[in-house]
Length: 199
Length: 199
DNA sequence: CGACTTCTTGACTCGACGTTCAAAAAGTCG
DNA sequence: CGACTTTTTGAACGTCGAGTCAAGAAGTCG
Image (cartoon, rainbow over all chains, first blue to last red; front, side, top):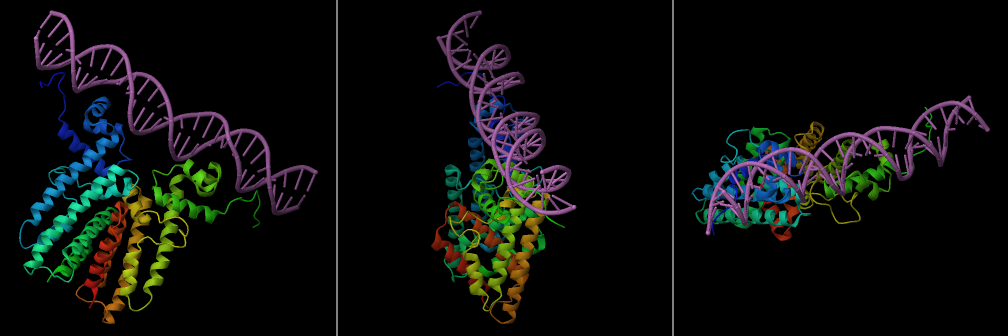
């Protein structure tokens, strides 16, 4: 099956990453196709050709966001001890360095933003978000289970309950931070949470 | 100062409350003036006359939302012991019974939704949201301080840090719940959080 | 080269949205 | 009643957004 026809002039992956940044900082509804055309330097028709309509484009960006985040999460928690890694994860709820190397960090977590804007009305978005949350708790619970067995984390609660609580904290922090972050009070709150897990 | 002119035919407060419900369930951007006209049974011009433009209308609804929530919060925490009340608050993050007596509960917390949608772009929304979060932590920290003094809550962390953490948890729970709530796992996570505060 | 396929470009369509406005209606005040 | 004020009503306006499309460009294949 030979590839024929005029070759694409832009890098699809790179364009998707740039679109992700824009969607991330402005949200789905507030980002117009025109904004994307200007920011990505790709004409409307080409975007439609490569990514489908706006909704599909956005959902693909969200999936990419989560893939990157999940890689970071898994890597960070694949070490002992777990609590310092957890603290790091809570401290940088949206630090996807690979994607945001240049500008300042966009606001909040894209999965959380999607939850606020499209869930539950959009069923496909709901599915993506639900799966992402599920993955988060599975990965974190796994790490906590090992840490409980190692005596690092208290077994007063199940790893699943602890992981669920951590999901709430990450998402809450990520959301509330949009309104302006008092770093020191956020850090002491995070320490309070982490200390609560200590055996 | 006599009131003259044609009297208003609709109840401003009641209309504001109904608009609040609509904004709450659909969000700011996704709620059109036409939606409001139909749901409130008030014509466009009358809405503009009574509430100003859409943005002012929405912000007034958010302010009302917070006033009601703050009353509930203050009342709930004005008792000892504090932890059961806190558990209740976490369990019903958006239970404003006065406003939503009929239909099902709209999704999430309106202040949190506003944060995701308008903050930080809209400075007035940012101000309202910031003040609401500040009030929450002040009220909760006050209750926790009394509870620490009474020996009910651990003093391993400051009341302020504990309150900040609780803000994250409430907002995170409220947000994540939009994607579908597994009641039992949410409850055990909440219990994990509350148990972590126990002295 | 010539047929074929895919991508590019930007003008265009079409609907939805927030907002305005003029005329009529319904009160108060003297 | 008649002057005055405010509200009601719904049509109209201008803007903007998502999505389409036709014509041309740039490749591959035989």
